[in-house]
Amino acid sequence: MPKAKPVPDTTRGPGFTRRRLLLSAATLTGAAWLGSGAVSRALAEGSATDIPARSPLGLPTDLKNPREVLSSGGRFRLDLTMRQSEIELPYARAKLRLYEGEIPGPTFRVAPGDDMEITLHNDMPPNTDPSAVVLNTPNEFSTTNLHFHGFHVSPKGNSDNVYLQIHPGESFNYIVRLPEDHPAGNYWYHPHRHGSVALQVASGCGGMMIVGGALDEVPEVAAAIERVMVFQCPVVDPKAEDLDSYDTIWSLDAERFWLVNGEYRPRIYMRAGEVQHWRMLNAGDQQFLPMRLDGLELYEIGFDGNPYPEARQTDEIFLAPGNRMNLMVKALEPGSYTLRRPAFSQGKQPLDEVLMAEVIVLPANTARIAPDVKMGTELPKGPLPRNAILSDITDAEIVRTRQIVLGVSDVQGMFKDTVFTLNGAPFDPQRDDIVARLGEAEEWELVNTTPYPHPIHVHVNPMQVTKINGVPLADPQWQDTIAVPAAGTVTLRMRFTDFDGRFVMHCHILPHEDLGMMFNVAIQA
Image 1 (cartoon, one colour):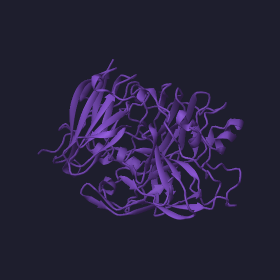
Image 2: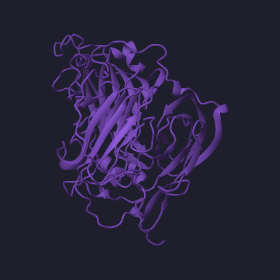
Image 3: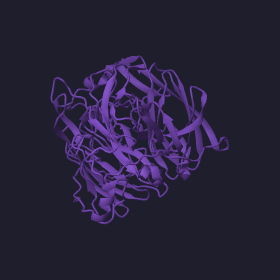
Image 4: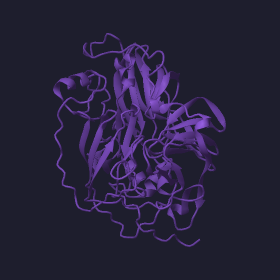
């Protein structure tokens, strides 16, 4: 086949200008929305909106929660700078593309109904490749944008619009309005500019977003110490200080050192009999995280930002790239336990066991933790709070069924002579692949024709997963990112509510997205 021809840049959003927006950082005051924990209660008195990274138990060797920025009086305001920062990793010194020079970026804590205004400044160095952009190949690694992963918000204008491109030296003002009935739970933000997203996320660019709500007021959840745990594996180019070679991240089994909140194999402390609430995020670029924590009791209470009907005991934590989990962890006997990813095969590729963290359970009456640090001991019992937009999608609501085929093709001249496809075609920003109507519901069957799994993420509207490999689920699950098994199928249902406009659906193995496994969904009012 002939080499691919350059495709002109057609994805710039309307009204975007190359000049820097002269917007000063606002000073936030007033009573902030507060999550659980003694730190949050103290904030209520001081009206603080920025919490430094710290151990929730006050121990110097304990895993720190990332720095947090909180909304105040229904408004979240932040200047967020993406820049190339020199970072001393446990395994290398590197220049990484990061938000605020932090791994991970600061946690955003907001509430339903909040108005979010974020000015993203791109202070990265200029793109060095002078050649024209070829669509569905890696390109322009210093051009970026911002995605609010899992949020049920508008995809248009300066909201969660992933078609925007923000070049080095430019800034863009995002305004995102959360609905009053937005589900409480864990979400995250990260770059989403097609062609550079995998390299930027592999560099460590991303952070957690927490939407507060009724789930946090469940007595057993409110009583528990809260941990924010962001799992990342910043990739370093062994031949250079900065990550500018896509070959470095391309191989699934390329050496990756997993960090938790930027720490390598950290210690996590608990007390015997204690229950903690762990908010977990797989913010890696392509590896799955099936994890075990033997010797402790684990109960899931939410997934992908969507609360469960009740707490569900489990013996495995499973996070595909982009997935989040709310997990209640109960410590039993004092001792040392390991959070580990066992050896497994991701499709055809075997991956080795990885030690993620060490969990140290101290005696319940330990003098190492101040007596005023709260200690929850009970697990949630009975039904958890329900959200109105997460009611079951019935057969009667379905107006249309579709089949979406996941594939890969050899195309000479493309990166590694490879393109990934949905319904036989790679991404084209000008093509509407699915056209649906606001207020309707559809059922989609995702058919994977490749020998490896694909975590498929749909923007804007949560999806209810009803079948895997044709087998109905006993408890249909609300998610925004679902792992479609190798050579398998997933059936999901989705309501298109509140927001019209164009958004995307794609694989969250991000090199697959950059190489074409993404298409457009257009919702018409």
